[in-house]
Image (cartoon, rainbow, N blue to C red; front, side, top):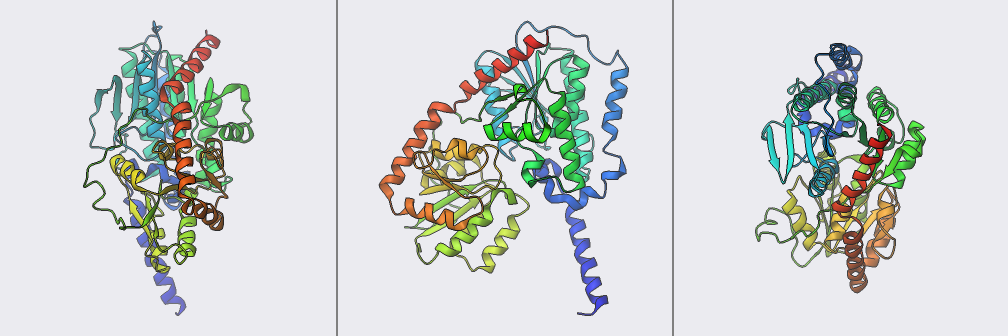
Length: 462
């Protein structure tokens, strides 16, 4: 190829990439932000996304803008999170939902402010929880950081509207996407702020290397520093915050994620009809955001190595994300007929797949906790999970599940073989896992632990 032709090809490819980035629906894909580096980096220095701090500062200088502070007679909690069911992207939405219901069942009044992807009701009370969904100021803007800024402005405005009608006790923020609004609401309403840090940009990328990563890292640092108390889901995340942000361990409480109790896993007969189920074959199931950190490429490699030894075994991987087409292409290149990336599935379909699978696997390279691993165990299924992050604290190797080396296909194959060739032992392991989850990971207990953090924070802020 001559130089001019090569240059024209590269230019055309760049234009295609630009078109993709310029049409991103951030309200759906915001949790995969690090993948869309090119679109965001070129705008980082435009200073458009920095206007939010200036806007909030002007509000704070106007004392009449902030509502009069009224002390709540009992715990009234204001939860801030960018995602909340039925708008599900990752585990954060499930966490906030489970915690909200747990708090409400304990008798506390719970308000949630979250993003509205555009098709949901703006205000409603579901299962006793007051939910307010807001549209970002620049909802159709393709610049990710402007979208986040607009979301924070909308959240802050809604919080102040509610504060004129209700007396809140504490603010509980979830991750950096709501950091700016949390900081503003805390200052304006003079309320204590508790923040749950579900993951860090440093951990996702094993370091900070780009402008976007640095921006997110700084937002996380701000949230960590302004919070009166922090909550993390595992000892692994506790150590990560202490090391990365040099925060005192005394400021951090470790409270795990949970699963909903007493669920009925009955599924409709046609729930699995659209899926590539293989008759008389054994299914290995996995689910998660289709991003590099989840390690699904390890399963593709393992499937290639296993296909001759285990012709009756196949893989279904569910989930949406930026790596989906890349992984599908890799499956085609390897001519694999035993691997299927099926894209996004409903909760009902997920439960149906857990019900019919032989075993479940979660091969993450980075995983602060791993709610889906608990869900698989709740179904009584034997699981294989990476020996990393919060997963290694959930799984007791050899008793409630098995731990593989992250990114190591041979490690997975060895463990999967032990389960596939010992059906009785695999069933026993699945039942052990189910018992453990039901005993230790109820949202009711997690809500009680969280209330203790609220109460301790309030005592220190009197």
